Length: 342
Image (cartoon, rainbow, N blue to C red; front, side):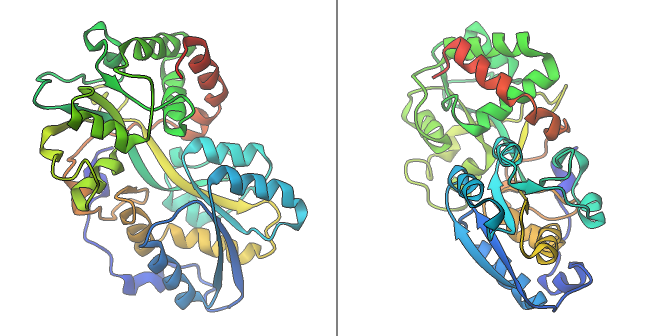
């Protein structure tokens, strides 16, 4: 699977209604609990409301807070749909019992199987690669694989986030899925040995550390760098020419992908409208807004990416089943603890 898999002529928003479920214009409401907060989401929601007559009532917050709120609300929860980021949080919601299985031919057809929960409790709607960035001034031959990051050659060179970060948890869980727990433990221990500093900050901070010279290698999601290409990011924009990037494992598994996604709340009071909204998120026009709002990759085939994302170039993505990866998350956290990854 390459990036060109995603690239095609931009579908006009006029086609929105044709892509929506058949029963549109019925009215009513849908209560959305969301940890997304991008400006383009406003247009995403307004087009759904205009096309269906369904009002979206939003409650926004951090993913863990929203999941805890849904648990506390129980059967009285007004939530219809939960939107959040990363497989780990979607699994957390599933394990907490706040999601329910959804049967939808539309979602099954449009969302590739590796980006769906095995029990149909969540679906991915946009993707981001977790890849290697490097200082082009100091590194002439950057590591080409995740495994290479643990080589002795990179001792004291790597900036990466903490073990509590969901993106790192899912990356390690994917390594477990591919190579087993022992190989994953050796890799994690190698990364700890190669850290330029104790983990601190977010992905943007790892990229800033390349610019400042604090490290020569950084691990980050693609959209953090694409954001600096597309708009002003303090301490990063204006210095992006200094930074090179590698989509790892191009000759083997492909680059690890994590996702934004959502599912229907376990006690959704507006179940029919919730299903319409989830199916809408898989429509071509919604995919444009959903992914472009954060410079991500759409999950639906044939939807165009932003110019900033295009600048990252073609790559082969890992097609591992993220539902299977999610089952390895407890083991990933245990390994992080064992090797002393703060």
